[in-house]
Image 1 (cartoon, rainbow, N blue to C red):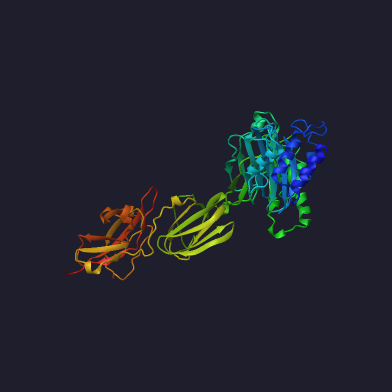
Image 2: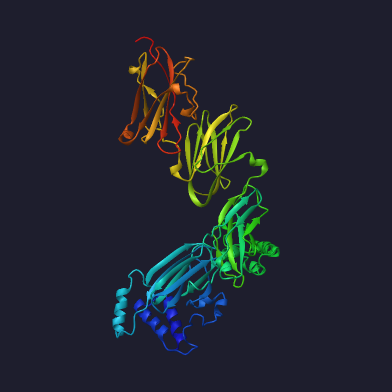
Length: 584
């Protein structure tokens, strides 16, 4: 039986529903790899085989053996699973296996079936028995090596692989997508794909309401190996794309765009890309789609190839909009590519709204106000591309305000806020827009704070009942005893008093500025500051006796609490008005 027939039978056995035992397959693979065959029949070796078969899109579907040093292309639809094999004939071999999806996420799992040793004088029965002992009970195709799920290119790399067969299972997750597989036993000398610099981040050097300027470092493939590398920038409002293949195929334009990127770096190239995209938009809309309602708004992607430039400015952008930017190094001779680390940017708002939009910095407390002539303040809080939980805190200083929080122009929170209130918005990317409103004629001050780091939250945890109480039976002509609930945190409490010369009734609620910081009070008004740490934080109630008061006099008492730490902000308990006794 010839080599080709024997290997095809092996592949048929692996793909059949009733898979043969591992102990039978391994000797068969060993036999195939070591068999003496004619030059036209022997297993193709690295640099000896012209990879002409790989130029057809259906190569992998019809041939599951991956060839060393060659890139293969495949196509998969969920929930389909496709299996591929890569043979390593010697121990301590360097092996790199890289899988790159195009338009949609895939999942792949890699296993290793180690080949049995030969030439030891062991009988076939002994070798089969040894393989049964090696076999993993829950892994009939070998020992587990690696798995990956996502949009990006992912690689397995080792420099000490044993002899064996790597088994790669590829699964579709979202929709039909193309993908490539590249296997090599010379990962350090191949330079098959353009290489990334030590800092692959795309830097934003400046941005305005309708343009953004980018800069990046050159690929070592260009500077060290003198390869012809062009750089292509993609921009869209949907998400970051992690592969050049994904950019080309996201709108079913791969053939049109590939045909016009042959003259990189010229303005004509960028214009031709956009013309091809626009032509394809019309034909794409006429195509039947499986799920039109869930298709991404991918037609707004903009692709510009800029040759060997390391600086570029994207223009004709919309003000106040979030864009996702990706950069790819593309080999001109092969069209193979590598992705830099993408970024995101929100362009500046239009001049007419600049005065209304205020940037809220992460971890910075900001003071602002609303009034009849300016009843709405709008804040922009940038988050980035990584989903995060955002804390937004709002504290009106005197009168209530209305709060609205928008994510991607969708209202996610709204509330009427009378005292300090904190909102959590989970799994947030891009930016949040916060609107603070008031219908009152008088000016209303407030403090606003935003962060993605809970450790930066500046306020203590006031108890639900933040009133200051007076022990009536301990009220004297020259002293009173006050009590308030503890925050149960390591904190400092500062007590202040002032004489109320209006001498209003104790039942009248005093007007208090909740944002009034203790350092703004007169030094003569300070009674004491008390630090509560350790076991004392477990106290439910804190009490203080204040002496040296005048008879028949009304005083207003305030307690400010500050959580111990750097950058912490005080919060005030509700003020308490107390009149001392006239006669004792």
